[in-house]
Each structure stands twice: as C-alpha cells, then as structure tokens.
Amino acid sequence: MPPGMEQRVRSLLSKASSEERQGNSPAAAITYRTVLQMFPQGGPVPPWILPESKRARDVVEANNRALEAYIEKGLKDLRQRYPDEPLQRFDQCVDTLLQKRRIYRQQPTFMFFPELPTIEFYSRNHFPWLEQLEAAADDIRAELLDVLSDGSQALQPYVADQPGLAMDKWRELNHSRRWGVYLLSQEGKVFAEHIARCPKTVAAVNACPRFDVPGNGPTALFSILDAKTHIPSHTGQVNTRLFVHLPLIVPPGCSFRVGGQKREWEAGKAWVFDDTIDHEAWNDGNEPRAVLIFDVWSPFLSEAERELIRALTARMSEFYGTTSASSGGI
Image (cartoon, rainbow, N blue to C red; front, side, top):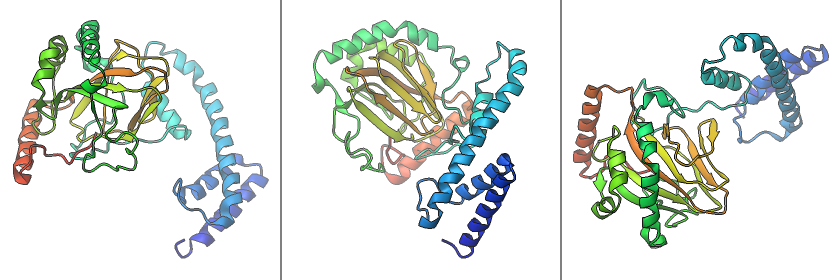
C-alpha cells in the first residue's frame, strides 16, 4: 500500500461511520464508495480492512437500491410522456449511475479508429438490408444442414493457437470442434469449394456492405457451438467493422453478451454488434447452436476513410511481409 494510503482509508472509514450515526446514509454511501474505489475490484485488500469493506459494500448497495426507487418514482410520469421513444441509452445511463452496469469501451486488438460510436448492439435502422438477409434465412439454413450432413469433419476448430491470444483462456476450445466453423472467407482469403457449396448464402452475404480490407476482411463463416460450451469473453481486431449474426439453429439455453447487454438468439432474426467491445457466448442447451457470421463496414465511415483504411492496412502488411496486417485474435 502506498505511503499515507492507510491513514487516508482509515480517515474515510471514520468519516463514513460518523455519517451513518448521524442518519445520513446517502453521504455515508458516497464516502464508502470512495474507499472501495481505492482498491481495484478483484485486487488484493489488506486484511485489516476486510470487515469494513463488507460494511462499505452493503451500505453502497442499499443506497443504490434506495436511489433507484427514488429515481423511478420521480421519472415515472415523465417516461409516460414518451411511450414511443427508444429510451435504451437513457436506461443504460441510469444503470451505470446505479452501479448495475459496467462501462465498456472499444478495445480492438489491432487498429483503433477514433470518434466512432461505442455501441454494443446496433439499431436496425442503420442496416436496411437486414430484412433481405433474414428473408434468405431458410435457404441459408438448408445449405448449412447439407454441410453438416458430412459430420464434424466438415468443420474446423476456430481456435488453433492464434498468436496474440491468451491461450490459458482458450485452452478448452483450442483445436477443439466444440466451437467449429465452416469458413467461406477469412480476412480476405476465400474458400472456393465452400463457396461453391453455399451459393445462396454467399449471394445473401455479398448483397451487404462487406468489410473489404485485404488482410482483415471480408470474413464469413458458419459458427457451430456444441451443447454445454462457453466462448470466453474477448474483443476483436478493428473497430472500423461490425459483425452480423444470423441465427440459424438455436436450441433453448443459448445466449450472447456484448458489453453490458445479454441477449438470446432467435432463429432467422439477425443483429449487428461491435466485436471490439468485450463479448462472450453460451450454449447451455442440449443441442448444437449454429449462426452465420460475417463482417460489414461501420456505417459511420466515409468512402474516403474506407479507401484510406484499405491502403493503410495494405502498407502495414507489406512492411511486415505478411498476408495479414493484424496480429491475430477472434
């Protein structure tokens, strides 16, 4: 513990206790929260503070719930004035204030493009082509089922000692078909035999604004997650692209989290998300789950910016003498 920190902590704890005795629970919660923020979550805590830290968390949590009820009561009538307005962002703001929700940021493993919005799941309004994609879901599912009729040997493990990955986290899925994929393209490399076998899927995907950056994209694949399998939390490579999920086979018990939002898939209903925000997936069901995944451009980039990103990525690949400018990741 840095010099002087113990004295500072003890002083704050004494102040919070005094505020509690005076019946000023909100002030005590603020002081206790200051103490808790001095010790990173999951980090080491000196033994002498353990009883006080539990008391601090209890007071802060009770205050948050009281504040939540107070806010809900005060805003109820105002909310009813806007029954048709999307208030999801405001709700997330409130949840963050109440410490019910962490703040998640973009954390690309390769390239960060400034001033792009940090959005976990995007509104469909940005992607008018989603309905056309969903209309092809039955044809796409039929092509996938034809592939799966060949058995698990038709798939390859998605995790296979990729450089840059923390392999301890991925140990259970490394070289395992528990998370198997059937690649149509990967970072610009095409798989001609697979494409020939899935012409309707390819046509539906290519009708969308593909992320065409050699060395980074486009990527399109069928992702098959076995029963009772978890994909650990991770982030993607670049925030200039977004990923589309079109669920095809979804047994009960399948879910997906991006940042602070967790959703369940619905077969035939697509969504678009930012994979540079921490995300993970579960299949707690008894059957495999299958999703079509592909990348598209962020709608917030101009054509000039897209062209420059292609050129920048190509120059980096040339400099390092590789086919891919990125250092790996999923």
